[in-house]
Every structure is written in structure tokens, then in C-alpha cells.
Image (cartoon, rainbow, N blue to C red; front, side, top):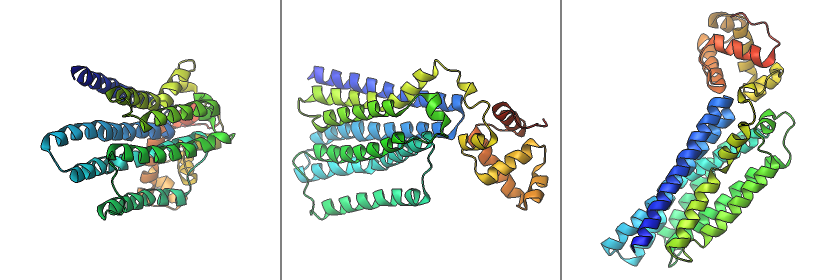
Length: 322
């Protein structure tokens, strides 16, 4: 028995450590690249590991509590289903961030239809699943943990197949794809890892605590592959030079700056005040301030001088007045 507890403790320490590594490296990438796509990767890692910690370790702790309460098999089964389901929103957000990262890295943007339909679709699915179980239309199997894990694995595999799509035909105007070195080949390597841990998790309880601990470690290890691999690639490159000597249009695409925001960037670089910009572009002063805030957020800056210097450094085209 003590070997089992010791194994779980070691597994928890390893999984928690990998969670921290994934989040910290993603944060370092965002600080280095100063682009929104790596903020997306950071959020993806945060939501992903939040679900893993809650869904895996929270559920395992719940099982220990249930075993001491002598609950009925029916009630224990429902708890085993609903506790992980409550944490699924974390996973749903993680999938969304993963897909957005993949598409943005390859030079694509989500359509509004996809954005507005993605979350409502999952909300409906979770509601229907809950209703089916509540009305006993969907019978809870003898091993509810295996049942819910396999449902999540299938959904996860579907999300990662969509993740792979933009890598099959990336846009030529996707500078980060080349700079990060995370190309189609690495995307397939990552997907292979997903298949591997999915197979392991599908039969996680086959050999008791040994297979369970192995599956959990494998799950966490593969989940940090993207930020770790990009970080390793970046160690041979000077990241601050990413995107240097690009034209202004590429600069705006690189930092996901909209057409209206681009106009404001040019006016800021010419030395105009917010009031002068609002008068020239026929927009309110508050609108100028809002757009400027969005520009600062996307570029990771916090002043007009920094923005002017960044544009001058990256494009080498504009005569900036400090």
C-alpha cells in the first residue's frame, strides 16, 4: 500500500512540476516575442493544466473521500461523472486557445462564425450529457471514471486533428512559423504524442496504480511539448530580432493590428496627439484611447515613444519623431 501512495506522491510532484514548466516557458516566450500568439499559448497552458490538476487529482482525491463515506454505488457513480464535467469548461477554453494558436501561427484568423458558435456548442453538449445522465437515459457504466476519461479523450483527439489542419497549408505571410521552427513535421510529432498518451489514458487502470501513474506523467509531459520545443529552437536564435526589416503591412499582420489601429499607429509615429488623431480620423477621443490601449496590449508596450521606436526598428521605413 505504501508503494502505491509513494507512487502517487511522486507522480503528483512530477505533474505539478511539468505544469509549472509549461506555464513559465510560455510566459518567457510571450515576453521574448511580444506577440499575441504567445499570449494565446500561455492561456492555453494555464487552462489546460488547471483542468488536469482539477480533473485528475481532484477526482482522485474525491474517490478516496467517497470510499470512506460508504455512499451508494449509484450516487458514487454520478459524483464520478459530474465532478470532472464541472471542470470541462477549462478544457474547452484550452482547446479554443490551442486552435487559435495553431491558426495564428500559420497566418490564419478565426472567422466570427466559428468564434461565436464554438462555446455555445460545447455548452449545449455538456447540458445534453448532464440531462441524459440525470434522466437515466444514458446509463452510467460500472467504471464511470473510464467512461468520462474516454469521452474527453475522443473530444481531445478531435480538437488536435483540427489543430493540425493549418500546418498542412500555412500562409507564406506567417513569419513566426519560420522563426519558431515549429513546422508541419513537429506538429505531426506532437500529434503522435497525443495518440500515444490517448492510448495510455484509454487503458489507464489496466495495471492498477502503475499504469495510472505512467499515463498521468505521459499526459503532462506531452502537453508541454509545444512551448518547450519552441523555446529550445529559440535558444539558437536571437528572438528580439524576429520580424526585423519587414514592411509596415507585415508589421501590422505580425502584431495582429487592425486597419483602423494601423492608421492610429502611423499618426502616433508622426507625433500627433490623441486629440489631433481623433480630429483627423473623425473618431472620438475615447475611441483613439481605446485603440491605443489595444495596440499597446498587442505589442507588449506601454508608451508612444516605445511604439514609435518599435515601428522604426522593425520596418526601417518610417521617420519617427520621438
